[in-house]
Length: 237
Ligand code: 5RP
Image 1 (cartoon, rainbow, N blue to C red):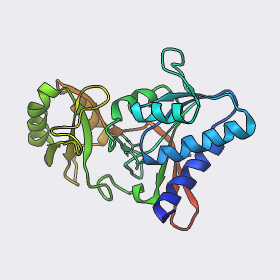
Image 2: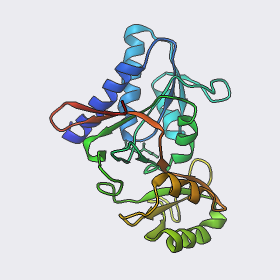
Image 3: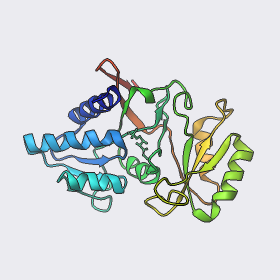
Image 4: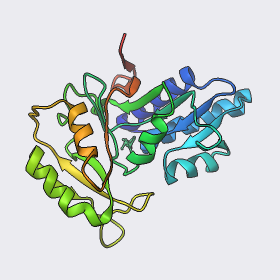
């Protein structure tokens, strides 16, 4: 296993070992790092017979839960979650996150809003002082398809940078999310006058914007797998 994959794995295993307890209800995030978390949850259940209910944040997460023979739950039956374990594309010094590199930001934010314990697992390349320092793919914004051009123009005119519709790779045309929407990736200017909280709140008010992949004041703790095999923890005192 290469260093980056090892970093994802050690972060995921540590978070699961510290947060997954008997009879807990967990939100399962999306992406490549979460795969290791689900593997570890399955191992713990097999070893210790824990009773754990897993609420997915995407089609991918649902498949992971099913394929690992974990108990699938949803927000109808479990609107309050003990914790959510999810990845991130970038984490800044204030624990503001960029999420949605995998296009799952809407369900990820909904599920994250149902817990006081959003636990992030990531490799060291996601650890930044400022957003945009390491992650160069922009901030994902999920939008209603008919509104993507005016939203793109609005953001470029009012906040600068460039906005691109995310195109699919194994399909002609745009990425269509699990919710039937498009994704815009906003390549924002590195210098911002406003706070991420202000920007996030303002962009969410543009008609047709469903959700933005900025997670402000949501993460409780971040586990970064480091190149030397250690896990660095970021949290507020
Ligand atoms: C998907 C996400 C993921 O959590 C994020 O992209 C990180 O993924 P990975 O663990 O593969 O780096 O927000 O929408």
